[in-house]
Length: 485
Image 1 (cartoon, rainbow, N blue to C red):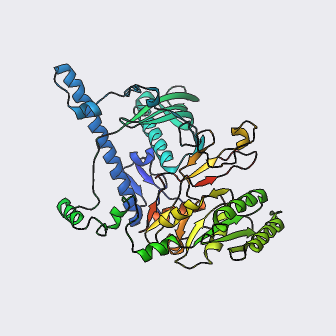
Image 2: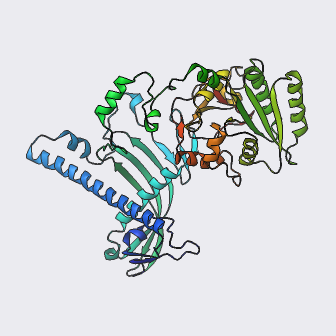
């Protein structure tokens, strides 16, 4: 009875159900309390998504039945039925060459381990992957306990010991999971026993569906393209993101954009050797060519920064050597917090200022500065470059003297960090519109996640989180340490 009439009286939740992917929710016929309209909308949306999933699963079953009946009746099988109606198997895709073999990723409860190109050896499981895994486990347990009452036993899920997963682009996601379960017998001699089982699972793709958020008149679009194919000024914001180049500007606008001042913000505490190396690259890239940049070093004054005096002295030397250069040391109080430092630094600028959130272990080229200017547009576009994260050269080069050329991008020297948003080019006005930094966050680089979501939900386009990696920006390894997430 308690499972049928679900009640959620968590303190201060007021009917908010945190985890909707729960068998208890699916079995219930009433949910109480449920009086808040936003919570009702969320619950209704989830229930509709479950209904859609059930209907899609039913279509896959029908496709499989059609394929089976076609074989029995010796009739021709339609292409869609053949594609969608293949029985579950890990051998549906047959690679013809070694390069075509689909690699498996190893997973635990928290991490994914991968040997694929462009992926770090270990990375945390993001929320979408975690939700997908939880949903799969829930469906497995519902199938296992389908006849639990008749059999006089129930099996509870405890945890995933380990597993493997891969995505077959043609057919769907595939999993091999080692599950720790709890066997509870409630008929006859009652007993509770932990058991481990392997589950071989597939999430088959259903038919591809194309949907436009806004209806588009193809004839009208074609006529406008023919009338004004040069400037592309007719494109709406929803189409501009697909244009792989900057729209035409006047000569004055192009000159102003090319010479736009970049304000480089560097949070710093300790790490003097790394800072000295950064300043050497900054001198070569910005000071000698007289680039239009401003360097703001956000220096923490806490007792945990023993290098503070040396860092200030180094900046004094560079200011003396380049008196016309725009360089500033801005003190920040408290323990090191990247979010706090960048919040303090960005508050010094106007809304029209172009900010580059950098780090002390990054090196960049002059060409990257131009890319930062070109890909960041006030009120329209923010730039999250994909950086190359370097392994420790002492390990890569087996103790030999490493190459002075840091920009050597191979699978052995490092990996592309295509999942981070810590390095950013953004205008101050867009930063404010995105909600700014959450200064309560202490974890490194996660302070940008809130900004990314704020931008994603707003009118400003995100540029290059998944486009061509920047071969002009490099994340250096500290000596004796492997740079990994």
